[in-house]
Length: 355
Image 1 (cartoon, rainbow, N blue to C red):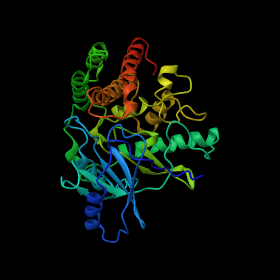
Image 2 (image 1 turned 90 degrees about the vertical axis):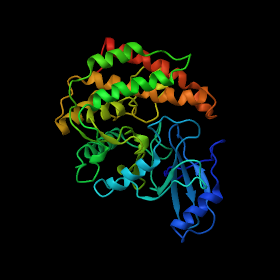
Image 3 (image 1 turned 60 degrees about the vertical axis):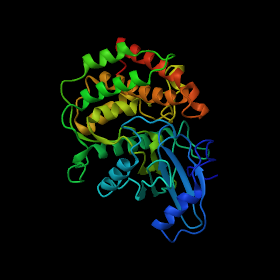
Image 4 (image 1 turned 30 degrees about the vertical axis):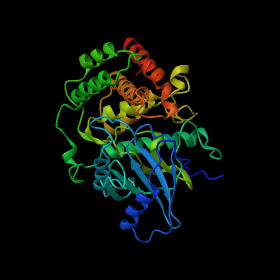
């Protein structure tokens, strides 16, 4: 059985116009042979990812979700431009091959990139991939090192200084995500007001630093070499990349970092194999990161709670679309339970910080 990540059937309501997409791509690359078959990768709660399989080439197409979208999210041209500018200085970014704004092709902007054929880890290791605890630890460190390397990119030399809005990233994030939650709240969702007040009161006066951050750095957004599964060969999903505080980026990552000793409700949300023997704990990740970067992390509880709150907003925004019939993906029906649980987790950490 191949360890390479596989796409499946296109979900109902998320089909593409194959003829229109093919005609556009033939204008970009006339060497493409035949009509493509189109399949879809799992996930896709945010932007949707399709595999276009030609007789002589495989391509990846990324487009926004169907239905209403947050004003500042799902900017496909921005994502493609960041990847193009970043590629020369951070080679793990896939190569963007084309962007499209033509409504005769699709109802939204989209881009097409090279496919990196490799392993993508989700809630567990794929069948056939066996790692010892020592190998799992090394893989974990290799993934963290990719985040550290990103935070050390000279963004000015890369031509990415235009992404920044100056000092005050933390303040803007707390204000912005609080506003987004209030707009996305449904009548069956908790209000999160005590958590938002705590974040506003506890946020540091200054950003730790300004660097290029990914904002969604997880195991299922990295591609592993199928011939050496400990080696990272790609980093995906640059939708929310920007210039900002690196500890906020780390807090976002740890919101998904479910450990073997976490409570059952949190384990139900696990979507990456951070529970395996050999994986670093959240506390160990923070210590390793601090040791490599020199950033002080003695008040990391703020960043951890921020990451969980931001995750709750993202989950609730997706659920809002489902609640109002803007998407039919049945997996989103349970997202309201995740939203409500995350408020409980935030309040518990506020009362007794875990890190």
